[in-house]
Amino acid sequence: MKTLEVDLGNRSYPIHIGTDLLHQASLFEACSKASSIYIVTNTTVAPLYSDSLFSTLEQFGKQIRLIVLPDGESYKDWVNLQTIYDELLTHGADRQTMIIALGGGVIGDMAGFAAASFMRGIRFIQVPTTLLAQVDSSVGGKTGINHPLGKNMIGAFHQPVAVIADLHTLRSLPQRELSAGLAEVIKHGAIADALFLDWIEANSAELLACNTNAMLHAVLRSCEIKSAVVSADEREGGVRATLNFGHTFGHAIEAGLGYGKWLHGEAVGCGMVMASDLSCRLGQISQSDANRITRIIKLMNLPTLPPKFGVERYMELMQVDKKAEGGKIRYVLLEKIGKAHTQSVSDSTVIETLFATGAA
Image (cartoon, rainbow, N blue to C red; front, top):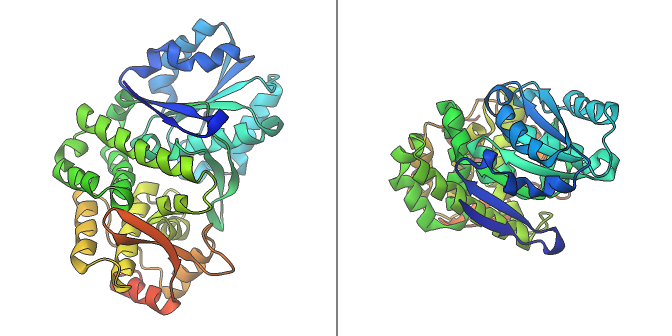
């Protein structure tokens, strides 16, 4: 097991990464002070891992309840958030209740938002079971739900008390889900560590085969990068926005297709192709670097051709973006492999990218 810390002063917390962690009660020690424990999971993950987690948590002698939600991005909404609140209120949850998010990014975001808002904030633990959640969404305290007009537009910053990433849970992922998680791994190399991107490219076969040692390095390095950024800029006032490389285009793809048609990582992967093209058009990376990003994304069995919504629709969808300021979108661009920044870009240049990548 490897452990690193997200440094946020008195709200700092550990990220534990390793195998067979669901059975290690010591990692869940924060639950010893809880009045009750609520495990929030979904219909896919519950049959696989809820019994193991339940038996581990029983050692603390607390009331434990299971909340099982439907599986999928399309269920990341008010209705299912309300289900969590209903269960908490019906069974007498209080300010000392602990919520545990057992699942992928959707479950982590929704359970975290429920924890952020129930009684104005209670503690929660992230137990991510997908690669995408382990390398990205479980770390950093972003929680929320989708709105029909925009992804993750309703939510709160609420840090967990721990992140427990058990690599054994990745064995049950379908290949498509594994590839979707690798998109966020690629992103971390592209924006912050050129040598890591080299490693990803060289070890693509091991990553696609879910080799444990390869996954340990991929998750650990991704979490190191993200935790350093979050520690420096918790609420995305500056450098943290670079973690959204590919997301402005990617979120537009998700919203335009309907949430769940493409996995989040698939949309982000394709969005990175588009953002790389835009970076190249602005003279910030070379054509060969843009082509390389596309090649690595394709290598991981991710889509590189965006849906053909047309210029007007893409521009409309991208206006609903958290990085927009005064009506102007701030795109995350690559200065070079391993370094990113945000800036406004003229609509005409963005439109060139939409045509060049096949989106228009």
